[in-house]
Length: 550
Image (cartoon, rainbow, N blue to C red; front, side, top):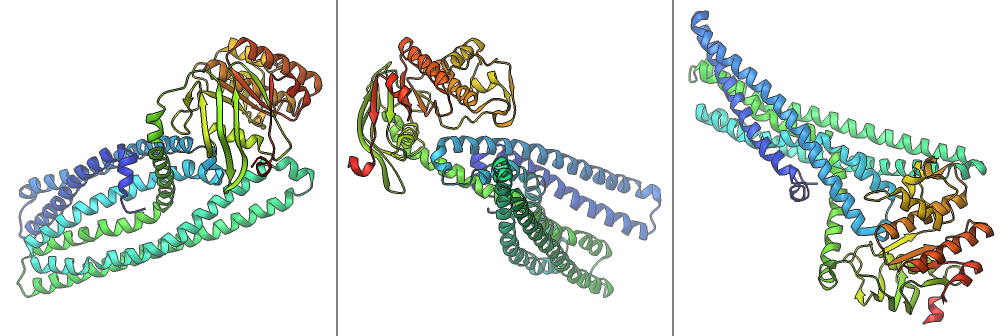
């Protein structure tokens, strides 16, 4: 990311107020810097001239006032930067989460979910240093350095010339060091993503790894990645410390050049003590902000790297939104209930056709079973209906077109093959995402899913621990039913809803689904391999491989 990426101002409005406040504070701090140097030099010169303490008292009081004002300004700057960072992070996190939602699971399928979580979590948290240290120093540099150089020029132009000639050396070294820092920082960031991914994979498959005796090997893998991350972190720290030393050395030599010039002219009497002392006090302040920018850049490097990834996600969502703009105008609002019609519908992965083309109609209130051999593309058809992957052909509901990214997803409710339960009560899992959870509606949904023996207040562990696989599957079905009833969805899709159920539970589930279809206007679509479910359906859509269909 650039020192100040323009996208930051567009994606986080709080950044604008932060920059405005930073500019005002920086201007006041610059005034304090100049005032401190002036009053201190005057106090010293007048004391040498023999003025008494009572005569120096007003000047000393003014000097003390400047010191207090500078301390207060530093406190205000700290508070402003901390609060500004919190607001900007909150806005960016909201934007990136909304962007991920807009891009959908199809976009996520091509990316590492753990890396995305790392970016939106600890990655954005790393922006604290960027806002509390780097940006305030950058603003102060843009304001203080030119003003200080101008003040020096007005007092002693040879000293100002020396500052101007030596000042560019620092940015040159900053650029060179910055390139080296970016290289090692990117490696560190990639290793952090790899470490997060490895750890999540191990945790997710810990039971399987233990069963097959492979847990120790995975622990060794995590140890190796952790060691690589430690080594890379130490490289980043080495570069940071080295850069700090180089910038300190260069700025010290530059100030020394000005000091030698002032000293020589003080000796030959061509420069007054008052002006010379004032210039000597101000000269380091011309270099200090620029030097601090280089130092703070390394501290903010993690946040800068994460911000780049965040902006890429938001930019991708913005581009997707622009593409869907025309579709949104042609199909505004949410379609009403009606027959779901697929015309020339097809889907593909990596340009390889998987489903279709299909022409099918699912009448209102009907119960349709989608069958076919494994790998024929039944789940792909569902994913395309949901907008998770692209499709060809047209989809209409009640005579109105369904456009991915424009229509939204309230018109359809879905339950996949994996339960995806969370730690919490059964009620919380069934009503997940509900705007106003309803216990009576949740109990009805459990009844439809043949899970009415489960108490709503029963607590589940992580990933639904505490219930059997069949119970977990029925809870997830109840969640889809609850959503369909609460949001009056037109279509309910269930993908292999009875794969983990025994015959009795499957029979109860089928009865519940038939009753739901008969008593509502829901268009029920069930992907299944089970004959009992297919026999209960009003109609069957049998899929065959895309090559045969073509």
